[in-house]
Amino acid sequence: MSTAEAERTEREDGASAPAPRRRLRTFDALSIGNFRLLITSNLLQFAEMQMMGLVQGVLVFRLTGSFAALGLTALAGAVPGLLLYPVGGVAADRLAKKTVLLSGQTAVGVTCVGLALLAALGWLAYWHLLVAAALQGGLHAITTPSRHTIIPDIVGRERMMNAIGLNTSGTNFMQLVGPGIGGALIATVSAAWAFGVMAVLSFLAAALSARLPRRPQFSFAEESARAGLTAQRPRGSFSDLAQGARHMARNEHLRTLITVNFVIVLLSMPYMMMLPGYVDEVLNRGAAELGILAGISGFGAMLGSLVIASLPPRQRGPMLVGVASIMAITLIAFSMNTNYILMMPIMLVLGVSSAMRLSLGQVLIQTYSEDEYRGRVVSAWMMQYSVVSLGTFGVGFLSEWFGPQRAIGGMAIALLAFTLAVGLLTRGIRRLQ
Image (cartoon, one colour):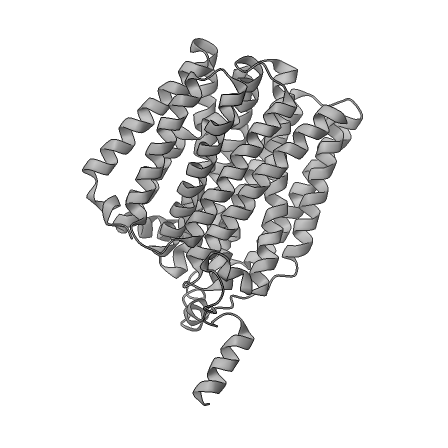
């Protein structure tokens, strides 16, 4: 085959075609049709997740009036996640990722239908929300590793940073839209309508996932399959988990990234899950204003992710620590502020910095992981969402004792001290490119 014919074949495949020079790097991965399909499915599912977070928080606080109840609800979603993220990692490495996504999204939709019926009949109670939080926590834990590791299968390593940045940007855009829709539906119609919309979003996401390819499209994944890396290992056994744990333990970069990220998440992210009570008690505002603040944070997150999608793959380790330090300083300002208008720019900065941290971490964790272990490594990384919930459980009780401002502010000060220590003392994080 001639060089011209080979280049033409690559372009027709869409996977290995070089990025056209005239296209902005920021949107390069969108040239691949299956990635457009995946990112649209993710947008719909993340909109459901953002709506659920706000609606669930508002209803829990309305039913109980307790910050501790918010923390307990977060814990209910965290425990299944901690148990099932490793299972989701094995599923991502051993099963068709398309099947995992389709099954999980359908199950989430069924859960939302159940909540909508309970709310419409006037039977919705606090314990229903606890059970739903546990169910959705487990379902998201199983599907999240497949959702993230399917990206390089579709776009390849060369476009991975760009695609992850775009995916994070798109899902963060839904952080702008989702809470606003949820707050508006509760304020103007009812919780039943909100849960009904969530069900529709989940079923639409499943319909799009059904159209994704069943097998990886890129040569690095196909070469691994041809080499027999998957077939040589037993499927779904405990040895899969042990092999993944040994891989992470041996890899210095992965050990450093996972440890540092878990501490950052534990100290920084609980503020978002405590926001419904914070807006009500400290800012003296309601569900509509809560939706606006969450939307502003989502807009900032979209901007932060687009920045990461546009950057070259250099100095990403130091950048991760720097972004976490900005988060800490902004959270200190968050805890000191009682003015709703001033909270808007604070939420914008928090959205930008949190999205940059998340995108950088996802790119680094997949860059430094071997292909055959990516699902299990990403599952360990994604346990951060359960860590957030555990942190929220602790902050919820601290807020009951000392008030939400002191609780969040104290965590932010600890985060700032940690990031400064990591930046100054940890050479491994500074070497990450």
